[in-house]
Length: 73
Image 1: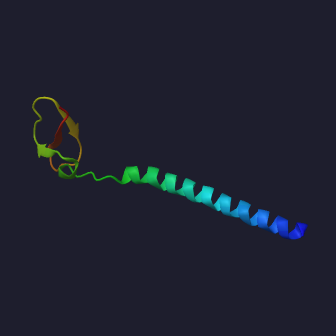
Image 2 (image 1 turned 90 degrees about the horizontal axis):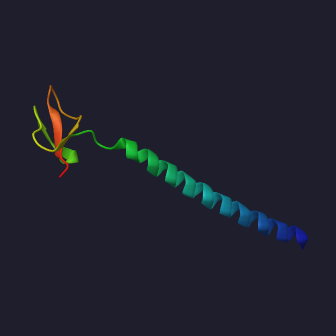
Image 3 (image 1 turned 90 degrees about the vertical axis):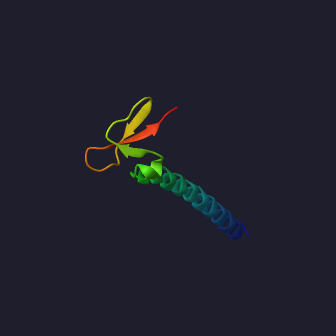
């Protein structure tokens, strides 16, 4: 009977290890998806203009010499 008990313990440990690996893979995948955000100005809630007036944040994502202006107020 000890042989059967060892097998059940091994299966339980294997399932637990698989669950931990699955959670770790999910967390790593979630972190890397942050780098896949859009670089489009309008999708970020900004507008492309030649000059930002007032309190604004300048970001890339526009064509030519324009800058992306997003209000930070």
